[in-house]
Length: 164
Image 1: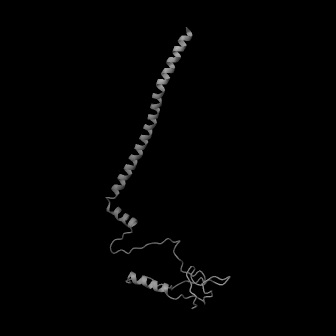
Image 2 (image 1 turned 45 degrees about the vertical axis):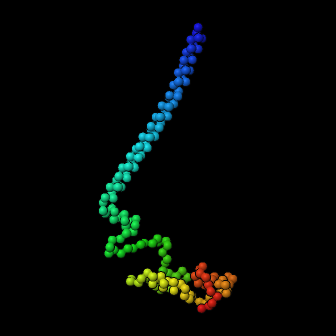
Image 3 (image 1 turned 120 degrees about the horizontal axis):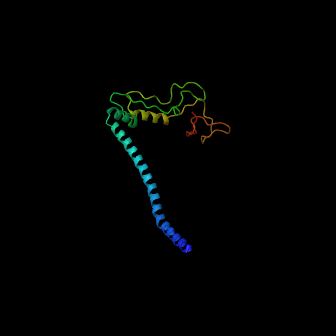
């Protein structure tokens, strides 16, 4: 008789485990999902608060003007705009070969009142004009330098076969 009771008790416990395990698994899964959703909700609320604060800043006229200056490079009427170049890209005013200060270049600086198209046309004329170099161009007719010498003039600039 003891074995029948043990057998019945084990069947009841097994049946209870089979019925309760899926329910327990669903409870654990839903609890995890609920935790994730609450964390997402808190994150969304924090983002909403941050966006509301940013939206409120746009009601301030000084903020709008500062953003227009920073983002769009706007200037107020009567102001003179300045653009600062990257200091690593600004060319020095010294000739790397001679070490002397360069005062005059082939292109004049932009003068106040000169139309932009005249400045561009002058630049085109200077670029298309004859090159001036410190010495005579010692090269071959195809613009290459003799063996062991560097070509005269600008690097990468096409050279003509003419000397002068």
